[in-house]
View 1 (spheres, rainbow, N blue to C red):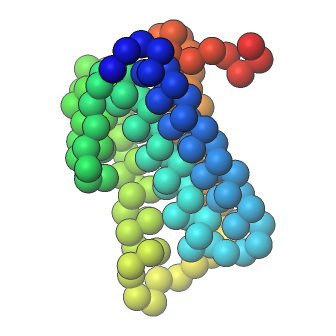
View 2: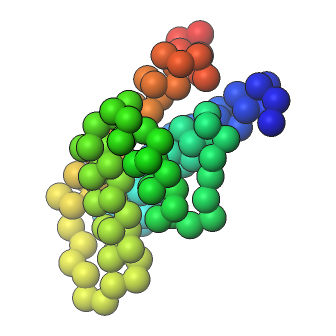
View 3: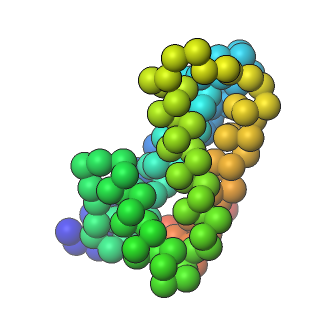
Length: 139
């Protein structure tokens, strides 16, 4: 992939992350907590896809994307273990709320997921800007 294509792909994935996070906020306000948790997770997932694109990596499985993140970015110390923990919690919450039976849905859990997604995406965006893969938001 050429550099221009790579930059476009990263921008596209980060836009998906931003759009999904916005959807999570809307769903949370409407008390559609299952949808809010789903969209918060996907916001994080799309940001991870943008990050992995910087190394020309990807996976067809969500667990594979998370494992690549750990191998390429957490283990070398680029991102903290808390980032890995966050995406794993979000993945489990999304799985539980999408496929589980009798899962309690509440405002607090939904709000925590959205806040976690905001911090996660901000960290990835800051890294992408610092490494020259994205322009700052103000530019």
